[in-house]
Each structure stands twice: as structure tokens, then as C-alpha cells.
Image (tube, rainbow, N blue to C red; front, side):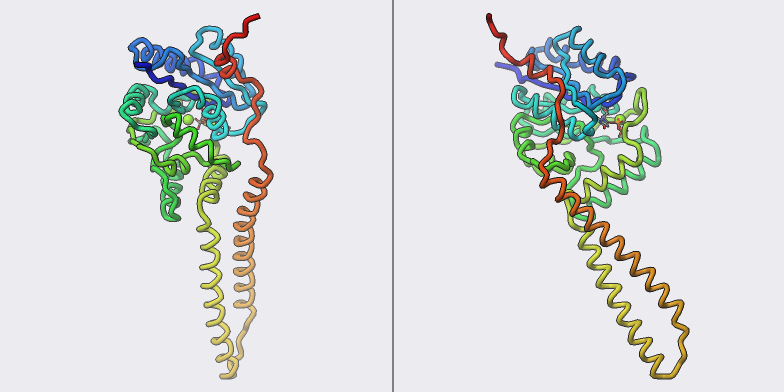
Length: 325
Ligand code: UDP
Ligand code: MG
């Protein structure tokens, strides 16, 4: 029987410190799977260079020269992690029976890849890597992640807790994913919506082996905001409830003030006036900014800009049949 062709997709943004090690680890895993006849000989590790400014691309080119297992895709500039994953899946999806996405720093345990492949062969289209232990993450990272997953659950977005972007997708799952044409992508929210036979695979998350996290707090907040506003209009609804509540309270205040006035009590109105003025002003600004967030999203979507621009695509180049002169 023909074994499935697998492509492991690795987004890389300034990862010169970790690439030599992670390429070795991933290469060995693929080689072992090929040798034990678990996967097709044309299986590959595809590095997507997301506009790195360090030696990431030369390292990838070097790996290409070393073995035909490795190949690279280079963006013209930094387009972000999610877009790097999409590009890798788009490019490799057509010629691979399954793809696995994994971070370059190998915080997600690559040793479970053979098990992912086994589960794919058992008939699963989607195998989600789920961390069963976050002790390697800082307290702050853990706390922000928990708050985020909790909030998403509350507003009704189906997320698999502690599943990030380490997963296997079958070819038809990738095809289905490509149908989602939105510019603002939040993969871990979309993948559970695909359906298809899905299974979870638990693993231990390790600390980053070298280099710094490419997700500083600012990027993390932007990512979370994107996740919320791409999937839910709960924040807009929340403004409505707060608005109704405040209007109700101000009505009561009006009655109270009127009664005081009729009773002839002189009320020093300055304090209450100022408080309500500031309070309402604040509420309005929050409301407008949330609505603005959605308007901005619509603006970005209607422009239909490309998610990414590829500068070099060595994967597709290797897939083409040789031209005979
Ligand atoms: N990454 C990327 N583009 C970016 C930021 C990150 O391709 O703009 C890649 C990065 O090289 C890594 C993965 O996304 O392979 C996850 O990033 P990182 O490990 O820094 O995030 P953390 O694990 O700290 O959340
Ligand atoms: Mg990491």
C-alpha cells in the first residue's frame, strides 16, 4: 500500500538560535518514519521564513543543500505566525496527504509526531496536540492564557483549551480550511469548526530551548483581541446591556432629584453631575472603540488584501517534474 505523504510545517521568525537543533530533531523523526515505511519517501519538513532579519533563511538554504527532506518558503516580510501557517498549508496541502504544524522552538513535543501519524492512519482527519502541563510557562503566561480561554468560553467561542498550533490535518481538512477566506485568521478557533473525525493527543510542553519568545505582551493582546472580535459580537452586546443599565440608573437618579427638588431640599448637584458626566463619557468612549474595532475588521476584510507575499518557494519548485531539453 502507498504510504501517506507527510509535510511538517515550521513557521520561523528570527529562529537562528533554535533551527540547527530543531531541524535535526524533525529530520530524524521524518527519516525514521520513512525508514520504517510509515510514510512516503517524498515527505518533507517545510520551513516558512516569516520575514526573519537574522540568519534564519541562509540556515534553511543550507539545510536544503544537505537533504531533500528540507525545503523552505520565504515571505517578503513579516506577516505573522498564523499567516505563515496558512501559507505552509496552502503550498504543501495540494501534494501532501497530511500536514503537521509545529513551532520552530520545539516547545511542543515532536516525539508525539509518530503517534499523530498513527492516529491519522486510523481514520482521523484532525489530530489536535493538547498540553497537559503548562508548568514550563511563566505564571504570567499561564494566567493570561487561562483568562483568555475562560473569556472565550463565556462568549461562546468553541476553543480546545491548551491546544495551540500543534496539529495534524488531513488533505481534505486543509482544503476545507482554505475555504475560510478571511484576512484576520484565528486558526485555533476555526479548526474545531471544520468537523471531520477529530482526536486529541496530550503532550508535555517544554520551555523554549533558546532565543526569546516572538510573542511579546503587545502581540499576545492583539492576538487575543483578534480571536475575540473575529468570532463573536459579545462585546458589542455587552455595551448594549451596560447602556441599558446606566440609562435605568440615571432614570432613578432623575426621579430622586425631582423628589428632592419638590421637597425643597437644596441639593449640591456638582458632585453627582461631575461623576455621571465622567462616567458616561468613559462608557461612550469604550463603546465607540469596541464598535471601531469591528468597523476596522470590516475595513480590513473588504480590502481583500493578500494574507502574505511569498518571495521564494522552494517547496513547489521541488514538486515540479523535470523539464527535458
Ligand atoms: N512566529 C512567526 N511569525 C511571527 C512570530 C512568531 O512565524 O511574527 C513563529 C516563531 O518563529 C515560532 C512560533 O511562531 O516558531 C511561535 O512563536 P514563539 O515560540 O515565539 O511563541 P510562544 O511559544 O512564546 O507563544
Ligand atoms: Mg514558543
